[in-house]
Image 1 (cartoon, rainbow, N blue to C red):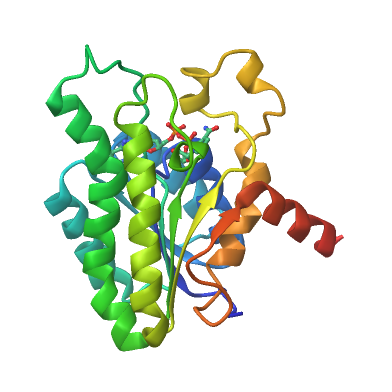
Image 2 (image 1 turned 30 degrees about the horizontal axis):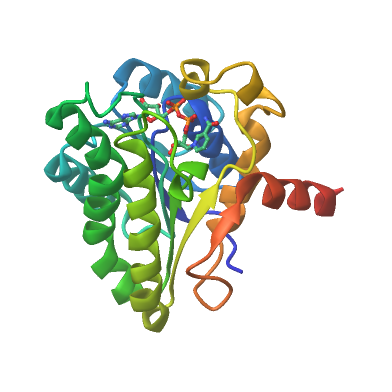
Length: 246
Ligand SMILES: NC(=O)c1ccc[n+]([C@@H]2O[C@H](COP(=O)([O-])OP(=O)(O)OC[C@H]3O[C@@H](n4cnc5c(N)ncnc54)[C@H](O)[C@@H]3O)[C@@H](O)[C@H]2O)c1
């Protein structure tokens, strides 16, 4: 385990939902954080909140559906902070559309945010982590990475493929001491994404996203020798950390 205090994190989807809580947790652990999101106003508000508490954060307004823009954002963050200890790709969109109604453009956009950005962000940061012989990469997974759900024409295949990318990168990263893992949420979380998709039944056991955040500070400090190629459960890991902290 590596002490994350003073180290650098690159985080996507930071403006709201789970990403915002991950940003707060990483900053609380002393990390400097490059925060990427397409929602400029909310991202700026978060950056102002965190800076008011003395944090060193870099907000980057980027549409991750564009792989060139995603790579450019990483280059900016690299120029500003240097090689990150952790890359967390948390951003995603979920649109429920049947095969009859989906357009290729909409399908492609969703897959590009989930999978294309996972590739573009990792591809840009990878040689720097290889050179440093150090790093942790985390992709946000979902039950949709294991099962199919009605009308998740793009989200389910995107999340499945992201798991596949993680497994391949974990094999390649081992000799470079780069840990590559995914996390399921483990519980439904109360976020804008859930607000627009969850039925009352699906909200059973729902928890605030802050309950999952400790897992990400923990994963920011692991190396490949500790765990790679794994699918962590963010809720369970966070609860275990909370119990251990007392
Ligand atoms: N909400 C749940 O219960 C749940 C369950 C399983 C998995 N997940 C996963 O957890 C992660 C976080 O989910 P959430 O519920 O916080 O989602 P959310 O929709 O509440 O937040 C997602 C964030 O990603 C950003 N984003 C979306 N498209 C973007 C783009 N093109 N470029 C840059 N940023 C973009 C949004 O602006 C937002 O800040 C996602 O990967 C999601 O698939 C969530």
